Image (cartoon, rainbow, N blue to C red; front, side, top):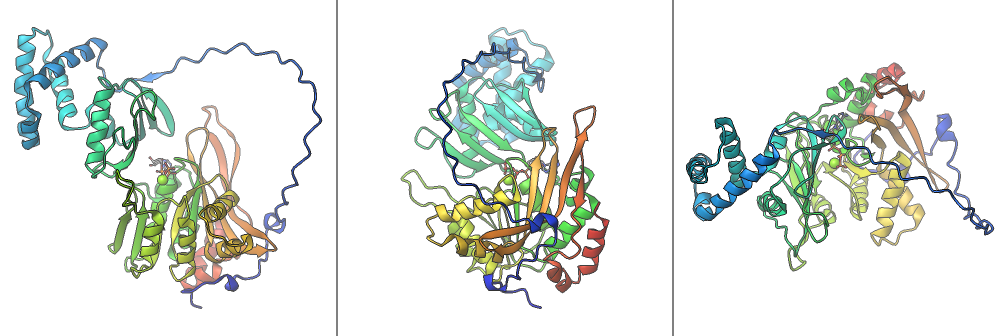
Length: 485
Ligand SMILES: Nc1ncnc2c1ncn2[C@@H]1O[C@H](COP(=O)(O)OP(=O)(O)OP(=O)(O)O)[C@@H](O)[C@H]1O
Ligand SMILES: [Mg+2]
């Protein structure tokens, strides 16, 4: 059996085998007539509840007085130093130069400081002039997932799935803006009044977004999805209980047997991580092309081409969209196309690619359930201006997407794979989906941690069985399916 080509016509008649699949989704009722106008009852307003005092995580031990001294010395330094010349020096010499001048200023201004305070000050000023300023201690930590700076005085971080406020602050919005500018200029972009929104990447691969005033009302707003040095592997996800052991094995088989997969999930739910994990099962010999808005994926295979979109320049021209990249992939003898995030009309091109010999292609998108993921694809295609009948779009979806993996960030901050769902085919106008496994929440422990299990749905022979067989993986698949709870 060959799996090179697919077509909507090749879709097997949908034979739902699970009770869930047997029930076609109920059509939405026609819009209900508006209820009779009733005289609104007076509602007793609740007294405003006091906002809970926010806990601040101490990330640095700098005091208020320290910040004041820092500002004085920094301003004096800026008046003295030739920034152009400083930029010519290598890091070590620049540091030495700054150190000499700072020590001199401290002496002239008669600032009383301990040696360790002086060292802190020197570090901070060097970070400020040469690096990422107050962000440096946050960037150095590998346990932080996101850094969110909302203007000079407010910085939040995400650690272990929870958002915390920190005591990190910038001297003022000008300093913050300078750092934003430094970050984005490293990848040849700009952020200023004329183009106040900018996506970029730190040199280590962390994904960055900047939105500046006047759009961001309270000062430059910087969001960094931190690059994890040790990318999570599927085994890590098993250790974190994001997926069960047999569930992970099923994902491995899905990756190996070149199924076309959509990874769906909310923001920060672990979609990119999951995509990265799935790509680990691509054979080293395959030619893979990744298309992203800002390159985050880290494929381990030797034969990978990484592509990145380009925003328009200041005159509004020169944009290279995700559609352009995917279309170009088709001319690059690609075997698999991996799309970082599908969010617009490129959905059409990805489906076409999946449908025309690029088996094993994958992409992520924002949706809360597998079914919602498919309606998102449908609306992305419709809104992209393709005048295709709804049924044709659905046939296309069924002919190209094999599976949807749903990720979610639960309220306790943990990330879980909620469903591994197969796209079975079209029954009338409805796409039939079938869960192979799903996560069931059973309760909560004393610490507020959610307890649950990944359960199988009793499917013995999923639709991708033949593919698994083609890659000699059907025995593994049978064992994994049996081992599901
Ligand atoms: N299963 C997991 N367990 C613990 N941490 C995880 C898990 N999956 C992802 N993470 C961490 O959560 C953070 C967000 O993950 P990721 O970038 O994959 O999310 P995303 O859904 O792609 O986010 P976005 O919508 O912003 O693109 C990362 O720091 C990642 O290391
Ligand atoms: Mg992502």
